[in-house]
Amino acid sequence: MSRPVIVAAAALTALGDLEATWQGLLSGRSALAAGQLAAPLDRYPVGTVPGLNGAWGSAARQEQLYLRLLAALPELPAESGLVLSTTKGAVDELLGDDPPWPGQPWELAREIAKAAGLTGPAATVSGACASGTIALIRAAQQIKTGEGPATVLVLGIDLLSTFVTGGFARLHALTPDVCRPFDRQRDGLALGEGAGALLLASPAEARRRNWPILAEIDGWGVSGDAGHITAPCREASGLTRALALCTDNGRKAVGAVNAHGTGTKFNDAMEIKGFRAALPPATPYHSVKGAIGHTLGAAGVIEAALAVKSLATGLIPPTVGLAEPEADSGRLSGREALSLCHPSILSCNSGFGGINAAVRLVRAIS
Image (cartoon, rainbow, N blue to C red; front, side, top):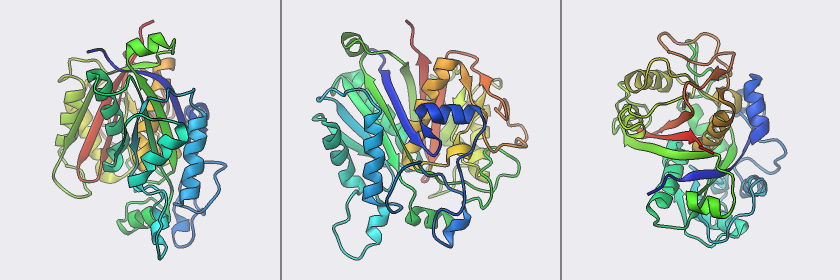
């Protein structure tokens, strides 16, 4: 069984498309700003995709987002499969009194497949904030085992919505100031909207179609803490297990980590503990959420697309928002980019319910 490969990548975030997002991260720019939602949520900084119209959390806004993302991809084979990741879809539609409520997670994959002209099998992953990484793993498994089409589109999408923002506010999980991943003074996450897409193929299919191979996927792991409905395991047991599965118990080198890094007290502490337990101490890591916000079900796909950029350049960008690193945080990128210590990168996410997922990408050998 051959390793699945990534042949195309695209993203839309509060910083712009994939290239604009990458350049914004390298320059240390944050696209988060307060005053965008209605009171009392207007005091929280959030990240919004430039150029979108329509109400927050609406089906119209969601459609604009995925249509723009699809337009950034090359022509897709009609027989391609689709694995979608989202947490809430157009959730604010549900705040209306009567159905229909368009754009919901249970119908979104069908909508996107139709818009993209895809006839292959479509599935939806909704595993909290690890959804995107789990969707990527599911697609990679399908290609590796030959159980589906030779090409699979992985697409992650989530909107900024009053419903979700209000929920996180009630949990006292949002920062009222600056999102500071892995910082000693971190006080909460900032939400963002966005979408990411990765086109996966078998190596034989990529060669047959003369597609560029941007990265190979050669390891993954998924685990559950089973400890609390929102809080991560303080001992990082689930994340440590996912990292061990992803790296074959440390036998596979890791050039850097694109961490979950939400800027919340317990998540970041848990990740630092997990990295210390499962990875060599010199492994560099970073977070993008201080720049674009936490994009929920889209985060894993967007961050894997950025990991592809890291492989191409040999760099991980600064951790925007970080001023004073947490004690014993290891080799964390601050105001400067860091070099990969091996031509590989691991992207990981952790979500409510103690869900953890990690995937290892390696630079393609020409």
